[in-house]
Image (tube, rainbow, N blue to C red; front, top):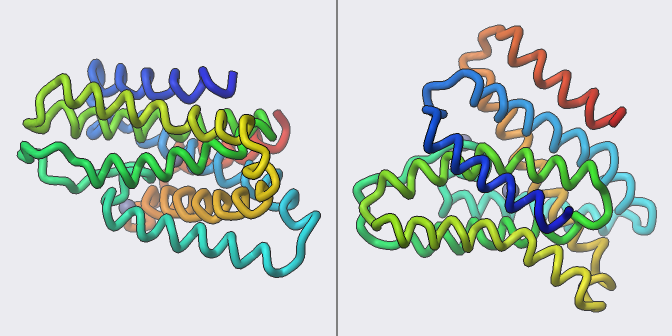
Length: 222
Ligand SMILES: [Zn+2]
Ligand SMILES: [Zn+2]
């Protein structure tokens, strides 16, 4: 399950990009808001208390390092992890740095997936809009379909690779609490940014508020 769901999420994202028009769709924006609320809630309800159980203040340093690290990654990815894209669509060059930054992000989020099924759902749901936006960019760019598919495939494999490395190597498990803390920082940054950017001009939007509350409730009870 921990290997299949993240792959499936990328496939669904790709299909959404191919058959719907996510950028103009309000359903897509609701999905994005829901993914942000759910991921934030799972982080607060499960990941956060867990890392503080065994350590004190110093673990917080790693959480903030993760947050800082994600800010730096987004200088390269231009915010793709939280749902939009400002890259030049006419580029003919393979966007290697984008792949590197998304790859590191995805690898990191693969590490804690074996610890909580809620987290697995949270990461999978978060991946759908990201993969959709990524697909739109790749297939509208001029790098060619083969390279676009290759990019998407490598991106899809990184989270399962993270989970696999974690299960395979003992030294990763030894430092699991610190790695989890870094991932918490990453999730706090992307999920709050999604929610922050969701309320354009702070205009009241009942359905958006509804899916955010739904995300919180589902993360708590299910
Ligand atoms: Zn943004
Ligand atoms: Zn992610």
